[in-house]
Structure formats: C-alpha cells, structure tokens
Image 1 (cartoon, helix red, strand yellow):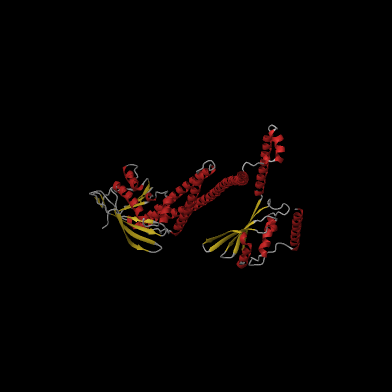
Image 2: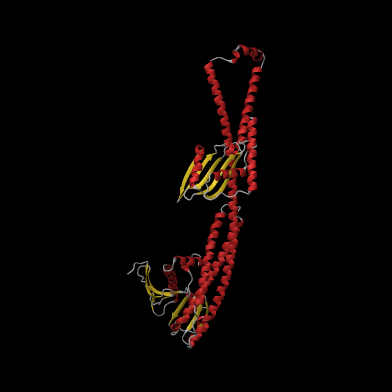
Length: 560
C-alpha cells in the first residue's frame, strides 16, 4: 500500500532495444469522501511512440455504462497531466531537455491525441446526426476538440474525427486496434511536427533579436555579455533540434503501415483513416523541416561570424585600454626616474653642505675674508661697492643651478638609451659546461631564481658583464632562462644602455646578439654544435670590424 502522492510501476514485458510495457498505479491525494483508483498502461517503443491505455470503469455515480462526456473530459485532463509526470520520471534528463526545448518549457502540459473506444454511444444515431452543430456535437467537442467529420464504418459502428483525437463507437470497435494505433502514431507525429515548426520559428525570432542587439552593441555596454550568452544558447538549441529531426526521420522510416483489413468495416475504416497517405505527408514535411533547419544553421553561422567580430572589437578595445594604461605607467616610471635623479643630486648637495658646515664648526669664526691677502679685494669690492656682494651671490646661484640642471638632463638622457633584446632559443644545453660558464662570471651574477612547476624546474640567472671593454665600454645585464630538468635554454634577455657606452664603440641590437652568441659558443654550453652564423666573408668582415673597434679604443685611450 502506497502513501498518497506516490506511484507504483510494474513492468509487464520488454526487449532491450525495441519496447517496454509497464503499468502505473497512481495514488494522488484526494478530498475526503472521494475514492480515486487510477491505473493505466504505458507502452514505449523504439520509434519514439508512447501509448497510454486506460479502461474507464466508473466515474462518480456512473458505473461502466452511460458515462457522461463532461466527466470523461475532466478525466482526460487528469490523465494527460499524470501520464506526463510518470513518463518524465522514466526518461533520461537529456530526453527531458529535448522535450522542454520543443514545448518551450511546458513539456508537462504537451498535447496528446485521444482515442476513445466505446462499445456503444447513447443515443445511438447515425454519424451525420451527431454532427448537428448543436447539443450532440458540442458534447463531442469536449473530448475531441473541434470536430471535423463523422462516418458510419458499419451498420453499428461510428467514427468521429476531432482536432485532438477520434471516437470509435460500436460493438466491433476493438477489432481494429492495430489500425487505430497506427493512426494514433502518425497523428501524434503530426502533432509533434507542428510544435517543432513553431519552436523553429521562435528560434528564428530569437536570432533576429540577437542580430538587432549585435548591431547596437557599441552603444549598449550590457549587450556584449548578453550576445555571448544568447549565441551560446541558440547554438545549443540548434544542435538539439538537429538531433530531434534525425530521430523523427528515423522513426518515420521504421514505421510500417498496417495492411488493409479483409472485413467490410475494416476496409471502410482503412479508407477513412488514410494511414498510408498520412505517412507520405509526414515524410514530405520532415524533408521540409530538414531544409528549414539547414537554413537556420546557416543563419546561425552568420550570427557566429558577427559575434566573432564583436569579440574582436571588444578585444581591440581592451588592448587599446591596456596600451593607454601602459603609456600612463611608462610616464609614471619616467617621472619616477627623474625624481630619483633629482633626489640623487640633492643628496650630493646636502653632503657638500654638511661637509662645509662641519669645517665651519671646526674652524670657528675663521674666514678667508679675514686674511690679509684677501682683505685687499674684500674691502674695495664687497664693503665699499654697493650691491656687489649681492651680485656675486646671484652669479654663484645661477652657476650652480645651471650646473645641476645640466647634470640632471645628462643623467635623464643617458637613462633613456636602453636597448632590451629578448630572444626565444629552445636549444639543448651541456649543463656541465653551462655551470663552468656561470662560475667564471663569479660575483658578477646579481640574481638567481628557481621556480618548480610540476615536474620541471625553471631557472633564471642574471649577471652584469665584468669586462665592459668587450661591450663598447658599458657592461650589459644578461639573463638566461633555462629548464634545469630537461636541460634546455628557453630564452635569453639583454639590457644595454648605448648612451653610457663610448659613442664610436656602442653596440646595436644585432651586434649585441652576435656578441652574446660568440660568448656562449666560446663557453661551449651547447649540447650540439653551434650554428653557422654566416659564410666566411661575413666572419672576416666581423673580424675586421672588431679590429677597427680595437683601434678606435686605442686611439681614444692615447688621446686621454
């Protein structure tokens, strides 16, 4: 016995890849005094068709016979909702996601095709008499929707078509169950295709909205994030629609139209249902859907290109902002360097002032103006000539100010002549020779950094060249980045201030690279042979260039 609100499911029969038939017993809470016994069978087929079957034995005070269509309409509403809840708990989450996509989030309230089979209908009339556009037809509309037609398939059997299903009444109605199930299968597929069409056109409207937002993305700061999310959602939906369409076409190809029954009533029902024609129509409609989904995919590709352009614009905007911030940081760095140079000059002046004040404290009141040899100049120039002392102080102020200003400008100018050369190498090292090479640098090594990343140990070594004569009389700062685990030199970096080197001997970027390569090759740090930097003529010209530099160095030293 189950608690109210629970449902028990009993599996009747199944095959692993074909079908599964089970029975559901629903126990939903009811009002006091109301007894609800609701049990119906469910048949799931591999072609995607679901059949829900129920035999109505009693509704309120009507037991078996003369069940009111009003009560039956209310019962069908409950059965639609209950069957959706039960099947949602059986299918996978991906299948539920596909259903929610087609029905736009209202898969639980999706339409179903009703097939009402009755042994007798009261009052017993001909099919035309039921379509009286009055009381009888209105009663039938409650369970079938808008009625379309009614036929007498035999003397005692009647068939009524509606927008949401059909009614078969008569003593022979149960004999045609295979044919009626095939009709239900095609009718439910037709209903699903209608919802598929509607969802596809809704998707196209969403694409139009996305395109409109892309066009105004430059003026709306929130549009970029929305466009990216919307494009991702639409792409996922198109993929799922293509998957659903593939299932639909596969289902239509697998469905077999039942043969025409031999008896007269069966042949009449077969002609009225037109099952074979329905299958041909559904095949053509599915082919049209393939074209529509293909066009939607091309439209999405166009939107993908527009979204990519939008991303590139956003990236360019971010790069421009980054460049602006970088320029500001560079300006701040330049101001900081100027301030440091000015502070250095001020420190020198303060040191000189402190030295002079110290001498004044040691010598007391002694001054050069008190000496006899200086008094000859002081008396007539400083004491007897008006404003002469003030003028001499002004001239001294201008001289020292000009000297400090030129020194500050020279230091700032020299600080701006830095050449930074970075090069990616990715070459195998002879670690033993590399250690010897670094050992020869000795105290010139300024920093050594080791970083362990997963299974590799990355090392960065920096030094200032000890012999500045080999580098145009300025020692560059050289940094090697290598992997200690694999023994590969990853990259190198050179910082060289050509304005602090001798003017005629300063190196450019290419000369720095060649000079460092020669130094590394001389240290034999490579595991393989050094690369050929050029032919013999080029090497000879470089040797001559080095000789000329050496000659210039000698002449400069001789002049000094």
